[in-house]
Length: 149
Image (cartoon, rainbow, N blue to C red; front, side):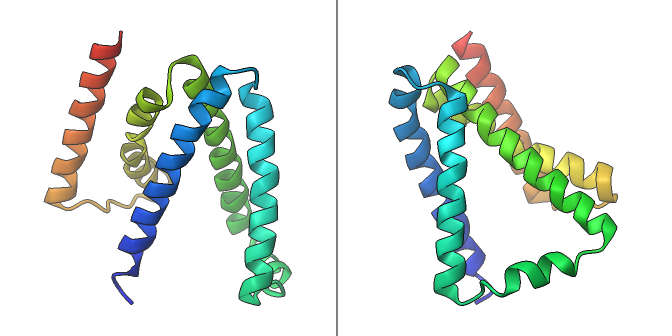
């Protein structure tokens, strides 16, 4: 059970990868990133509702929201707005360049997770190996940007 997060993380990577690949041709056709993003958000609501119903946890929706204190509500809303705008920015990037390059630049987001975790909560969640991995990501992103200019 403790290693289940790896399965979920790879599952997310596979799903995001397939989504990026499929969105490229659509966003280069006649659909604007804003329309694509709106449709993405609507489907997200439908999928989340279905998962809540199928999991038997639909009753938890309101109870869990009502249990949040004011500070948690602020972080909750900040997280939702940030993720939502991030998705929209992704579609803008895919439309402006292509899915492959946009995803390779976006892959730098863990560095911002580390930065904002420290800024917001004064937590450092890095080991020597994760720090080294972060350096490799930065170098990789710089090479990609240099090569695509």
